[in-house]
Length: 117
Image 1 (tube, one colour):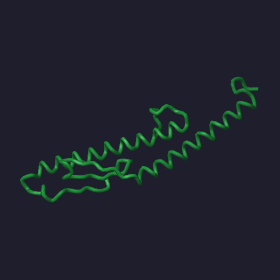
Image 2 (cartoon, helix red, strand yellow):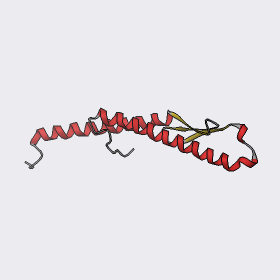
Image 3 (cartoon, one colour):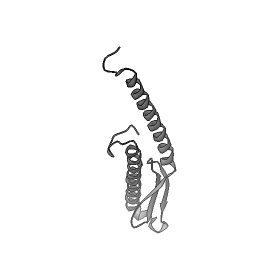
Image 4 (spheres, one colour):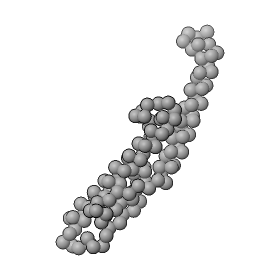
């Protein structure tokens, strides 16, 4: 008999661990799909520029209020666009982290456990 495996009982523990790992992998895949369908919105300039992204951080839309589209305001508009995109990305990261916490807690792991997704 191999030492450290606990005999036949050890094989049952291994099977449970493998089943739990497969379940976690399936839940992570489902979460990844769900994150692609969750939209978050970032904004800047009191809503004059809005950026929409998925919870995976993929930018999907950009809206610029036409009142700020003047040639002499080009640099301001560029800054507002960047700020809105960064805000959307930050909100996407927060939503992603919240979804990951749900999964790790469901498996009895610490909320800040680092998983590959």
